[in-house]
Length: 423
Image (cartoon, rainbow, N blue to C red; front, side):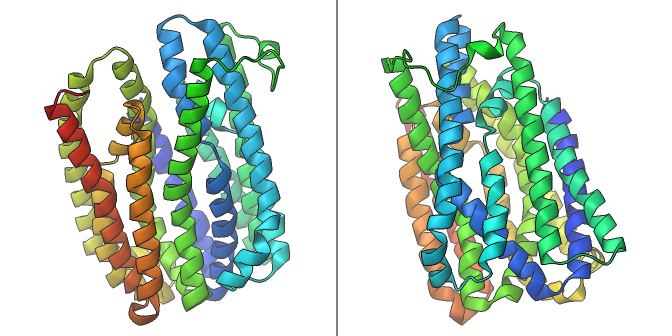
C-alpha cells in the first residue's frame, strides 16, 4: 500500500514542482513572497483549529472494528464529523478576528488577499473521510485527490501563463480552486466507503441529542483535543516561521526560504504514505497487544529510511545548483548553501518519522505534546533572536536544533519504557 501511495505522492510532487516553477519564472521574488505569506497565514490558522479528527477515529475506530462494536464506531464517526465542522468554522471566523493583531506584529498588508484565500478553510472538513479511507485501506483515493489538486492547478497556471494573466490575485484564485475541488472529492470518497462498513449516510448525522458522552466517547474527545494541541504546536510553526522571516527580512527572503522548504518537502511527500500505513498498523498492533512486534519493525524502518535519505541528500549536493536554476531562477541560488545544511535536519526527521504516530498509538499524546511544545518554543525564539544577525542561516541553525529536540527525547522515552516492560 505504501508503494502505491508513494508513486502517487511522487507524481503529485512533480506536478507541484512544475506549478511553483512556472510561478517563480513569471512573477518577481517579492510577488512570490507575498503569495507565500498569504498561504502561510491561512495554513497557520488552519493548524490552530484543525482537530485532526482522523487520528482519533483511526485509533478508536480500529479498536471498535476489532471488537465488532458497530454502535461505538458510528458514534466515533459522528463525533469526528462534529469536530471537523466545528474546527473549520472556528478557523474561518478567527482568520478574520486574528488578522489585525497578527498583521500588526508581522507587518502584513493587503487584507483582501488574506480574506479571500480564507475561504479554503470552510472546506477543510476532511478529517473523517481521511480516517474512513485509511481504515478501509482505500489508499488510491488519496493519490487521486493529490493528482486532482495539483493537476487542476497546473492546467490553470499554464493557461493563465499563456494568456499573460499570472499575477498574485489569479494565482491565489487558482490555488484556492484546486484545494476546494480536491477537498470535495475526498469528502465524497469518504461517503462512498461507508458502505464497506454497512453504514448508510442517513445513519451518520452531524449531531443528535441522544448522543451520549460515555467514557469511550469522552476518551475519544480528550484524545482529539490533545492531538489538536500537538498538531497546532508542530503544524503551526511550519507556517509561523515563514511569517517571522517575512516580518524581519521581507517578502524576497521568505520566497527563498519557501523554496528551501519545498525541496525539503520532497522527503515529507515520501513520508505521507508511510504515515498513512504505519499509524493504523500501530493502532491495530497495540489493540492486539503486540508491542514487541512494533519495535522489531521499527529497527528495519530506521535503517531503510536513513539510507534513502542520505542518498537523496547526496544527490542534491551534486545536482542542487542545476535543479534550482532549471526549475526556478538564478535569484534563488543564494539559498543553496543554507539548503544543503538545512537538509541534515530533514534527514533526522525523515529517519525517525514514526515516533509521533507510535506515541499516539501508545496513548502517550500528552508526553508528545510536552516535547513538541518545548521544541517548538525554542525553535521560534531561537529563530526570532538569530534572524537579524544571521539572516536565513538562522533558519538552518534553529531547524537543526528543533529536529534534535523533537526526536531525541521521544527515542529516550520509548526505549526506557520498552526496557522497563511498561508497554
